[in-house]
Length: 175
Image (tube, rainbow, N blue to C red; front, side, top):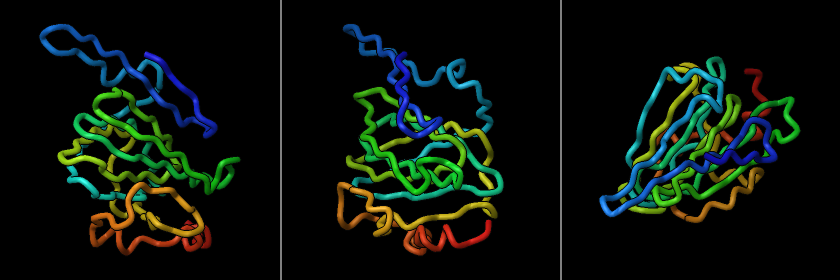
């Protein structure tokens, strides 16, 4: 396994091993010894092509996420919402796919979102905290201030994600 640091403190890319032969392949999904964190909560999502989910974070009970694509391909975004961070308000993006066997660790304090670039995309998340609906906040995926270079123009959004707040509103609130 190769761990690649990014310019965002704690945000890391994990290029994991795949062992192929004439039967198929065997793949590493998660190795906790390199993270040193507890992951008590696991979830998965299924998305059709052009579905966009996010940008989501939990404030009172923040979640770190180890994100892996099991099937398909996504454009993944992590937005630094840690006020004291040098990269506050900046985002990191990466293409993750089943073929690449690359995962992303997103530390607590980041908003996360992705759009599915293929049909039948299955995502797996290992989370450092349980879901807390009362602590959830959503930031608009297409906020002009953030200027995220999404690869699609008209995504399929949930009702909840269509009503997310601007980053300016997020900054102004006293959480």
